[in-house]
Image 1 (cartoon, rainbow, N blue to C red):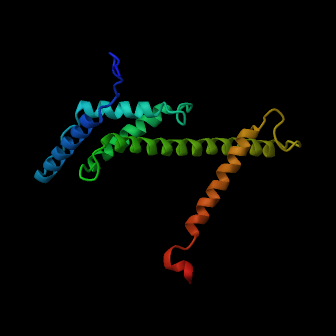
Image 2 (image 1 turned 120 degrees about the vertical axis):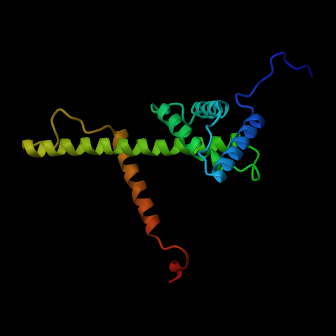
Image 3 (image 1 turned 45 degrees about the vertical axis):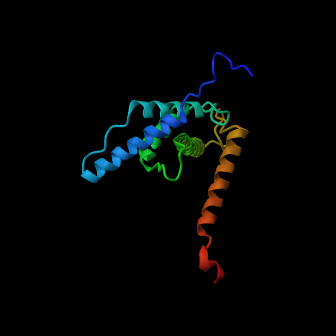
Length: 180
């Protein structure tokens, strides 16, 4: 088989990235043992983290969110925060480690944004209801204002149902207590 003149290169070389992260962690541990401040992260590690977060945000399950930039920023922040926990004795794949951190940072940002959307919709709904009560509107809800679409009503209903389920799970007895 003849190879193409232009090889398919990865956007982050895993071996080089893992070696750079391992070296950075050794420097951090050495500085910590001497009581000094940890060294700065190399530009190479920062660029790799940025590339991984940006590329992950283009996956189909993250591409259509309007707050992709915030997702990427959260992911980079979490990676910088937790890159020191990478252990080369357990794994030699820093790329996968950083990708997992980014993935879960994206999920946390999506949950935060959904909660904010829920709060916006409920406050709008409450303000419309309050104004209609104050103004003495006989129609119940304002004449000109539509509280929400079916999508938003379903979103609110699903969000509240999910909140109830999580609260019930937290209340359930754990361990030995469930046998008493």
